[in-house]
Length: 70
Image (cartoon, rainbow, N blue to C red; front, side):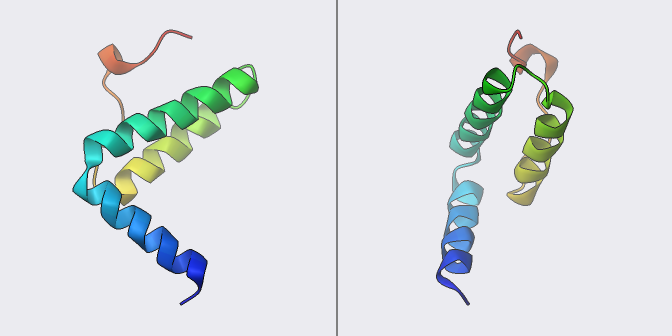
């Protein structure tokens, strides 16, 4: 496997071990992208973040009370 594949697998294993921390990182990345793009791609970033969360076994969606104001 390539070095990138190995790194991706390690990241996925860490996310599975620490889903709360991984959720915070995904949310931060999603928020940063939305801020930098003026929420132009909000639907796409929501879909991508949900897919990432599902990949390590998280709920896949945020609860409404966890959704930051935009």
